[in-house]
Image (cartoon, rainbow, N blue to C red; front, side, top):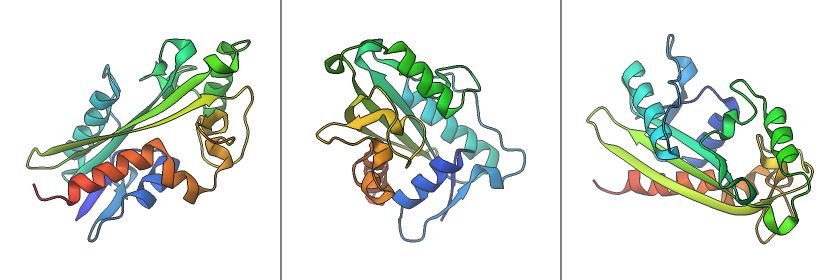
Amino acid sequence: MKVVVASFNPDKLVELCSLLELPGLELVSLSEFPGAVPPDETGATLEENALLKARAALRSTGVPAIADDTGLEVEALSGGPGVRTARFAGPAATYDENVRHLLDLLRGVEPKHRTARFRTVCAACFPDRTEVVAEGVLEGRITERPRGSEGFGYDPVFEVAGTARTLAELEPAEKNQISHRAMAVRELRRRLAAPV
């Protein structure tokens, strides 16, 4: 079965493809469909945004679609940036700009108040209107400066709880065992493999 990953982000596509392995499942990028465009992420929650993206990809391609939305929730920022994580420093912000903005806002905040969590919601939508949603959460804290060269986004400043390492200091295989996205995708894979 062909399934479109509703994203133009090559980093996310690689990570999702390595995590979502089911027999007979062929994952393709949304960029392989001419004219496909991502919808505006107008949802108030990660689940709403994941479903918006998956539904839009299904409509524009005609094939089943999988999408995810991830939010970084920082205690000292009252749970922000949340659904605005990818656009934290502005609508077209780069990874580095978002990280700099986050660190600027947390300047002077004590380590005990820098706790954070990554939350990922994955959604799969099918032509028969079936929708499957799963979530994964990873607890940690925001470091005072970036560390590590693996991963993408906020990975260099997110230290995983119970370790002394950021997500960017983990090898991809290690990250894929424990990450928020890995947990959400594993749960989605479990639900997709279960009889409906």
